Amino acid sequence: MRSVIYGTGGAGGYFGAQLALSGEQVILVARGEHLKALRVNGLRLETPNGDTVIRSVEATDDPAAATGADVVLLGVKAWQVPDAAQALRPFVGGGTFVVPMQNGVDAASQLSAVLGTNHVLAGLCGTLSMVAGPGHIRSAGGHNFIKFGELDNRRSERVERLREAFAKAAVNVEVPPDIVKALWDKFLMVTSFGGVGAITRAPIGVMCSLPETRRLLERCVEEIAGVAHARSIAMSTTTVADTMKFYDSIPHGGTTSLQRDIVDGKPSELEYWNGAVVRLGREAQVPTPTHELIYNCLLPQDLRARGKIAFP
Image (cartoon, rainbow, N blue to C red; front, side, top):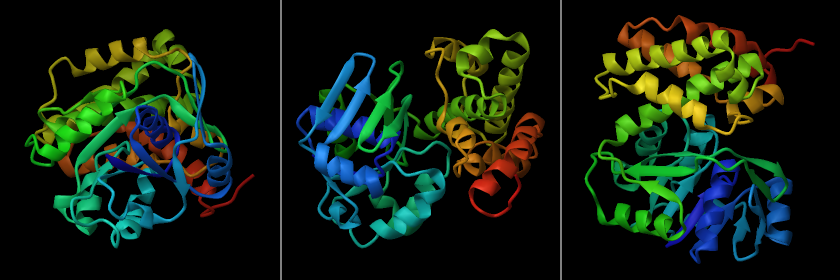
């Protein structure tokens, strides 16, 4: 398949690298110093098993690279999805389809509103990967996966082709029977992890090892499960216990992109993570006091990073 990675950050870079290593045609859309390094040196992927430099990828800053693509894997930040949809609109046609990899539960509907539902799958991924420098993706290892599916959950030919491409690349890939439930499972896991990590500035191993912080993390998970139930999302009765068990399996130094962005003073996905829990909870008339507290505490940092307020 001809795959365009639109937004070569931690997730886009990691999964794009795996496809390229398996022999798939991969085009990376990036910008700035990151783009320059990709063009000159190729894509460097650092994992616990060593470094690999992939020179077979094409790198560009032009959305027209999506013209004639089989699939566009969208790796931009959640707040950038509407702009990315508009940038891709002239170039997504024919059989091209877009798979969002953002955290949160809004991306597929935002893309569908601009590109049409026939050009959009729902998708999610998990990877402890980040941009360590220009042209350099660092993965902490652990759980790396991608899941996607048609918005109506039918098992289409294009879904199967993409699944086969990732399987060939030795990526943990799944087409869930209910993609909306899968999105909420991930939303519950990463939003709780990210919010507590951002206010404590601690990695997951520390959060899980301290009884007080572990209980805070568990309350976050419980609140999202309550919102999901109120919105008729078919969450498992063991969701909370399963999520806490999953946290215990993550490499102890693991952090989320939300936490790293807040710490680094960058714009974050706060509105689409903990902010979304608060918004969706209000719509469903379900209280989410823990997420509301986290959101309210982190909001000044996010607004400062966006240049909307200033303070020392």
